Length: 462
Ligand SMILES: Nc1ncnc2c1ncn2[C@@H]1O[C@H](COP(=O)(O)OP(=O)(O)OP(=O)(O)O)[C@@H](O)[C@H]1O
Ligand SMILES: [Mg+2]
Image (cartoon, rainbow, N blue to C red; front, side, top):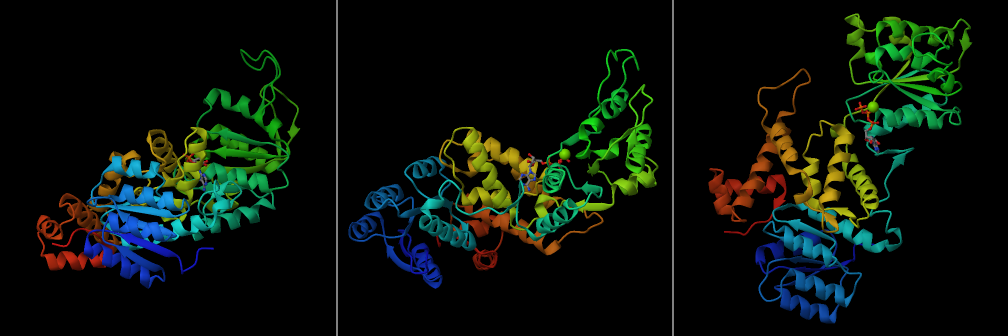
C-alpha cells in the first residue's frame, strides 16, 4: 500500500524550488531527500531506491531525462514526475516515452502537485489495477460520475425504474438525457422488451404518423403493404420521445390518446390496437413556457411529466470532470489502438477551467480529438483543441455586463481572471517574478502575495 512513509527524491538546481518542495512534501508526511543537480541525484540513486523521484528537466550536466533514465534503470517501479519551467512539449513527450508518470509545467498549483504525487504513489501501489486506470471510476449503469448532483439523478432513476410512471427528462444539450432514459429502461422490469427511440424532430411531418402507428396497405400513395408502427414494436417496453417539444399539434393529440386510453389505430386502418408502453420524454426546451405560449398541449404535458428528472450541466457536477475525461480517454485510446493512459495535470487544469457549453458530449469530442492528435502516452495541453478552450476561458472571465437572471459569483470570477493573468505573466516572464509583476503593473510584493493567495508556486526568485 502507499503509505505516508513513501520515500521521495527531489532534484532541482534552483535552491528556492528545491527547498519549497522539500518542506511541502515533508509536511505531507513523506520522507524526502533532496539533490542539488542531476549528477548528485544519480549518485544517490546508485546507492538507494525511492518510491518517487521529482526532478526538474533543465539542469546542467545531467538533466531531468538523465535522472529519469537512471531512476528507471535502477528500479522500474520508481515513479518519476518531471517539472519544467518552460513549456517544451518535445521534452515532455520524450519524458513520457522514457516512462515518466507525469510532467508538470512551472508555475503549478500546490494542490495539483500534491495530487499528482499522491496519484503516482497510489498507482505504484496497485500494479494489478493497471488497465483499469489509476482510480476506480464510479458509475451507475452506463452513467459515469459521483457528484452529489448526479447522485440525485441516480436516486430518481432507481426509484422511477420500479414503476411504470411517465418521466420527463430535462437538461441542456449533451448532458446525457438519452443515457438516463436508457438506464431507466434497463433497470425496469421491461428490460427484456425493446426501448424504441423516437426523435420527434427528426421524422418529417407527413411520415411521423405512419412511423408511430403503422399503416394499412393503400392508406396513401406508396403504402404498398401493411406496415407495423413503432408502437407495435415497443409493446411491453418503453418509448423514448426525444426532443418531445418538437411534436406537431396533430401528433400531440394522437399521442395523448395512446397515453390516456392505451390504444391506437394504424393509418388507414379501423381496428383499435391496445398497447402497453411506458413513456420517457426528453427536451432541452422549457416545456412549461411552450405550454404558456400554446405550442404544447397542457394536458399532454402533465401526462408526460409525472416525474421530472433534471440532468445538471457538466460545469455544475463537482468532481465528475476527471472521471469522465479518463473514461473517454481509455475508450478512445483502445478504439484507436493507442497506449495513452493519462491526461497530464496541466491539460486537466485547462479543462477544469472550461465552461463546457456542450456538456459531456463536448468533453467526449475534445478527448477524442486529443487522443487522435497525441503522439506521446499522455494527453498534453498541446493536443487539446486549445483555441476553443482559450476562448472559453476568456469568455468566462471577461464577458462583461452579461449578468443574466441567475446572477454571477463575482468573487470567484474575479479570482479566475486574476489567476489566469498571474500564470500568463509568469509564463511570458519565463518565471521571473520581478518581470511578471512589471507586466501586470503591480509591485513584486503584491505579486508574491497574490501568487500565494491563489496557491500558485514556481518561477525563479528574482
Ligand atoms: N454521465 C455520463 N457518463 C458517460 N457518458 C456520458 C454521460 N453523459 C453523457 N454521456 C455521453 O455523452 C454523449 C451525449 O449524451 P446524450 O446523447 O445522452 O445527451 P443528450 O442530453 O441526449 O443530448 P441532446 O440534448 O443533444 O440530445 C453520449 O455519447 C453519451 O454516451
Ligand atoms: Mg439526446
